[in-house]
Length: 357
Image (tube, rainbow, N blue to C red; front, side):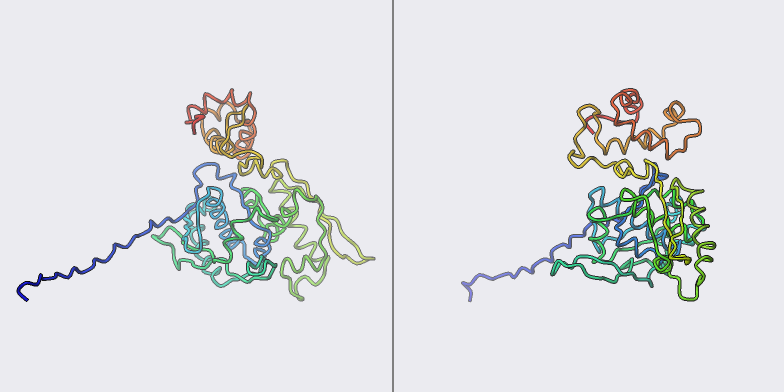
């Protein structure tokens, strides 16, 4: 025993737990918020017809936040916690802060109880099937720090949210739809935008309209009354408060009213998806400057907003009665013109533009 060495046992240390940084994406409305764009798959759009106007605004805001992360190539999954500030929500939808805060809380509580149906591809057999889902997997029961609503998307819904450009999708400017005053106006406006770039006439039967608005058997049983009380005021609201022009014609079956034809006229701006979100043509690299224009699409999107917000530039180039969103849209188009680019270059350099960006 005396010749044996004493063995000292060393207790293994517990490895330090690696804590991932918690990133909570939230909206960036610092510049050009009047030209924020709502984009979503038509499969999600159909589920939104069952929402109240307030719930509709919350879901649209959530989808815009997801779009923002997708366009910036930032990863998110079912564990990602998103944030919506009641101040940003109010600014986006043109509300005073008190009403915006109240609506955000009320609608998120009601949205926890609502589900919808949508079609998607089953990854196991690559076939289309019908799914039921809630809008949110998690919603904070109250505003965090008195300011932020926190939520997460359901796991099965995320591929559909991220791949909104893979199939048929709906897009429009938020500043247009927030001007509408009627519940049915919003529904029709979004429905019409599903068809732009495809056809300028939409035909709906009476039955399709009743299903669209969830009219039961006892609601507007008289078709002429439905036209007078629902459709006509909604069309007038759209024509008076947005850039979309709509003409409604009756479709008759004998002497009976069988449906309606809606003739749609969209502005050039409302048909220009690439211009709306700064997309590059498919055969060009997003980070490669055009050989003549010397600006990438990402730079055009970034610096058109800076130019539109610059008082010195605006005092010289903005039209007398030109709306801010129209001014911004025009600048984005003009920055693709080499002559205009050269004219604006001193202002661009002042605002931080460099070909090395």
